[in-house]
Image (tube, rainbow, N blue to C red; front, side):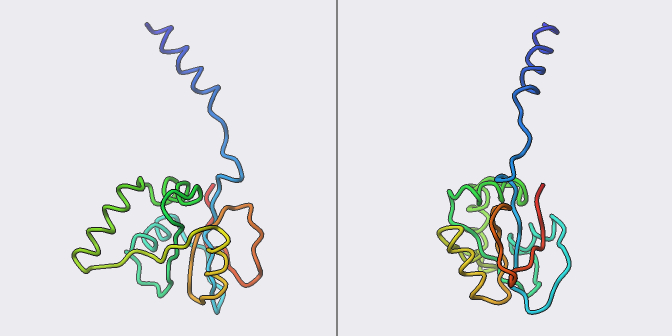
Length: 138
């Protein structure tokens, strides 16, 4: 039995792969003035409605690969848990969900057009100088 558990553990370790660059996320903002980096918990609070920093969070639509990675790595909740949370917030009138856009290109466009907006993008995207990186997953 111990040999079988050891074999299974070794097989799992050998099959796991390091995170690819495409699995990394950057959180970027359109800011009038430069800002420092954010911590993971600050990013999570911002996107889950718990921060009143004056920044407007923007997310991708449910099902988008970058959103799935963001939710798993930064928010730490499944899509269904996040949807349930925002349904409760809407029902109680306490908070509203972030603006949603359809694609990474639409996210970039929204960020560029709306000062004070903050969103997440794949780390391998080319950023214009007007956007500031606030957080990098890794």
